[in-house]
Image 1 (cartoon, rainbow, N blue to C red):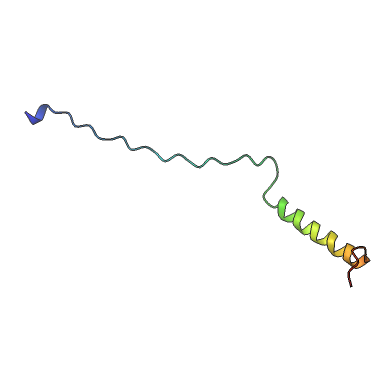
Image 2: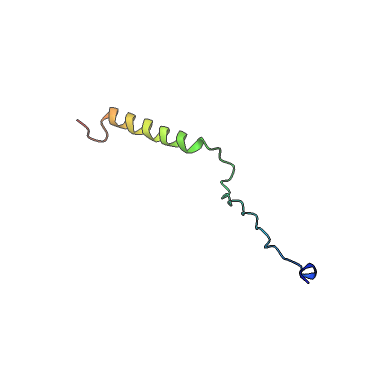
Length: 54
């Protein structure tokens, strides 16, 4: 009797890959370059005395 029973196994779902947000054409090092450029600009502004530093 038990030979005629078809046993179903639960189908294992493949985990979905994480969706990467499109970053556009910018390479990963561009934000670091921007931060360094801002720091250099602030440094030179302080050296000229435009910010009123001591």
